[in-house]
Each structure stands twice: as C-alpha cells, then as structure tokens.
Amino acid sequence: MWTLSDWTRHQATTRYFRHIVKWPISTTFRLISPVCLIFTLWSFLWIRYILPNFFPKFLLPLSAVSLTSSAVALLLTLRTNQSLARLAEAREGLGTLVAHSRDTAAILNAYLPKSSAVLGCRPLSILGWVLKSQLRGESCTDVTEAMLGEGESEYVQGQRKKWTGLLRIVRMFVAEKARDGTLNNMAHGAILDQISFLNLSIGRCERIFSSPTPPTYTRHTSRVLVLWLILLPLGLSKVSLPVALIAQFLTSYVLLGIDEIGVELEQPFQIIPLNSLCVAIMRDVADEVGEGGMPPLMREVQEFDANNINPLSGGPKSKKF
Image (cartoon, rainbow, N blue to C red):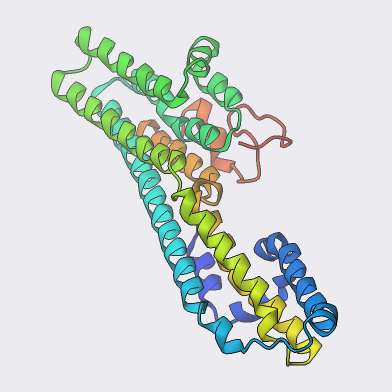
C-alpha cells in the first residue's frame, strides 16, 4: 500500500529522468524488446535485400500506411480502457472485502465475549490469503494451519472454493452462538448480512478472473497490429537505412508496449499488491478484536514485510504468499 512519500516521489518532476534511466530494466521493455527486434530485422531485410533485388520499382507512400493508423490507435485505446475498467472494478471489490471483514469483526467483538470474538475472527483474518492463493495458484496450507488448526484447515483445503469454507466456518460459529443465547438475533442478522457482503465482494473478483475481455477482440487487435508493423517498412523504403531501423524499432516499442500494458491490466490480480491487502485485512480484524495489541496468533503481522513468506508461522523466506 502506498504512503504519502510514495505519492510524492511518484508525482515529482524528476520522474522523467528516473524513468529514462531505468528504461533498460523496465519489465515491459524486456517483454516486448524481442518482438521489436524481429520487426526491426524485417525492416532491415526489406530495405537492404528484398526491395532492391526483387521489387526495385516498388513504391508505397508512407501516407498509405498512415491511413490505417487511426484504426490501430482505436483498437489499442478501446482495449486499454476496458482493461483499466477491469482493474478499477477489481480494486473496488477488494476494497469492499477489507471493509466488510473489518465490520464483521467489529460486530463480533461488540456482541461476544473477547475469547469468542477472537475465535470467530480467525477465519476472517486469513480470508485475503486464501483468496490470493486461488487467484494466483499458490498454496495457503501453512496459513490455514497456523490460524485454524489442523482439523479446520483440512476442511478448508478440501473445498473447491476454499474461501467458501472460511465463510461457512464463521456462519456456523455465529449460528451456534445464537442458539445458545450468547448472540442476540439482531447481531446474528447483522453478521449474516456482512457475510453475504463478503461473498459478493469475492464473487466480483471471481467474475473478473474467470471472464476476460472477449478473446476475439484480443486476437483481432494482435493481427491488425502485426500487419501494420509488417507494412510499415514499405513506406520507409526511401529514407536512409539507419533512420528506417530506428523508426521501426521505436514505433514497434510504442504500439506493442501499449498492447502489452493492456494485456497485463486485463488480469488485474497479477499486478494488484495482494500481499499488502492480505496484511491490511489481518491488521484491521486484529485491531477490532485486540485489547491493547493484537491477539497472539496475529502479532507477527505487525512486523510483516511484503517480501516475507509467512508472518503467521514464522516460516522461512524461501516461499511466497
């Protein structure tokens, strides 16, 4: 999660120089540079060998290539806008997940004895970790064993959707407290409403994860983009070879970079800092039920670093959650 200092650095005018200096280590640059080099090599072969030897009289004005540039720009713009909308919806869904986890813990703490509230909040505190494990194909066994114990951990791990197991544990817990009179009907209903909200928040994330932008649109954008970059050297035939190669590489970098960013944003859960979000849920839940500090099983989260593996069990740093 960003702080004020992060925003200050992000908005500083020195960002231009910093971004240029770090250009060679850019993730996007490293991903698309091989493809850019392929198009540049094609431009070299066309201008240096194919054109003079096989099509010496061929001439295609650059304006002819430019006619389709607006279509390429429109395809990339629509794709990027759609991907940004998916990112915004994913962030909203995860934000409501944090808020409803905190509200559920607050109600449990207000209407149950402290020990019972802590017991009921333990499944809530790891809801983020379990959801993250499913969105990124990771294991959450250590987390569930540390917070729930072996029996409940096996139950959660045996569910097709592990997060439903956590919500079911909380639902059964409050139902038992309502039956024995520890929890009144009003509080019981409020908690069930919060569990439904949690279910809806996770459902939004699942919907984004399981339904991408229509693949037909992605395929068509890729084909049009590749075709346009293949035709570009035909309009650069009359300029010097170095200028043509530089123009081909930079144009490929700009267009392929926009397309790559759209692809990355389309699956937002790979770029959203889920580690920080999981820790935020644990800390908020712990703050609601804690008394002068966090419950014992959650205290290690206070010193949690995003690069650490498991703040719960104190495991080694060789794994990631």
